[in-house]
Length: 257
Image (cartoon, rainbow, N blue to C red; front, side, top):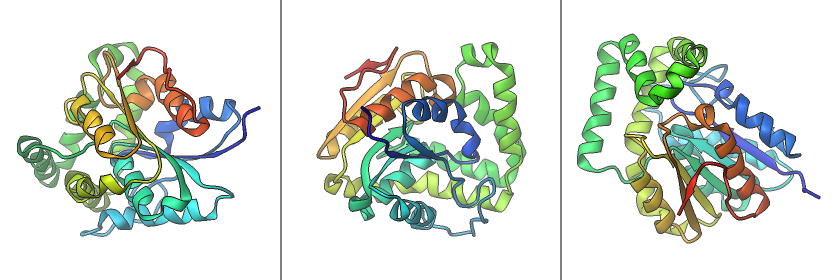
């Protein structure tokens, strides 16, 4: 019989807890307790101040973990993956496992310049960057198959408080450099999952994270881009459940390495 665990789902920059509804249903159906908070600066959470650091975003998540009845299983998407990593490094006794979905790590100089350019564009004209982000995040096949879903994501992006969004995007643009030197001391097991066609959170990054932590593994989802929790919730839920239940990774449709 499955022992119920607390699984915490952390969304990406500019999004909120609603991006997890498909994944949360599958994890709940497997008998686990799901928590999907809004990160600082997003949704119903308080604003993020300019100069907010990764530790500031991680603080409320760490407090949530401290209040759980047992160590939690963190599942972080994009910015949420960085936050989850910070919490796991700082509070290894409160984190049972880490699932990093479409995460970033050890960006190259070219990748760092690209994300800095997107941040600069957001400062100049925030609204125009949201359409660009949606095009980058979804595969063409998913955009055509579910235009309503794409519109929902666009609506969430447009509801952002500009100052909070920019503060959090700055964290997303820089925090992988903060975390990379610390990954060898990671205590919980780590699973990194990304889309084969994700231009920003690449399969090479997932492989590098899995190699750098003491207990790491990684998987690539063919034909998918960035928004795996919406494009392939079956794979993301299967990955999170494998971590939470200590099982081999057998997500449907994923290339496991």
